[in-house]
Length: 251
Image (tube, rainbow, N blue to C red):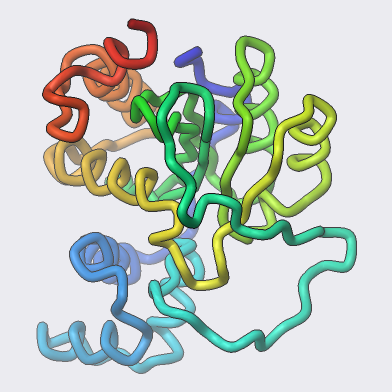
């Protein structure tokens, strides 16, 4: 269940200059602290640090990283007509058992001279990471492959995602619906609707990424393999009465 998809090994260096990579490192760390900062605040933050940047550059870098400020925004663009948006089903729902609700998300992971994207599937009740994958692009393939691997071993009642194109494509939602799983989607700009994955990303970054400068995708893969093994089987959670996710999920 903790394998990595095949596309993770199709790594090619990301063509960005050293200065842009430095700015992205700073933006990533600040976003982890303050996910409600938008383009204007991030621009002001970088300028206070002495970086002469304009909002256009900051917006481009945040988009490259797949980062978006957490606050409600107006509907400024039409979704792909082939991509169905499902309602959010978790508001007020009591989560009281394993495999009741799973959710997923993608986060930016810096390397020494580039970056990759990390996707994980988590069980809401136990906080157990069911599967994860790395990719050098934000295309849907690595998410679809990770979902397929996970559904081959287990299934849930509700699967929650954001409205990213990786998750709204029918290639992602149809396998869920075919197994009788309800699809739930966060409101636009409401990352906290998927709060447990957001908390996972904070743990991953503060406890692994920021303490290790991964040079290559191979190093990142090995690092996350070790971390998620630790996270699932050794790291106690206060919200789980200091039990591990594995103890709750498989106990």
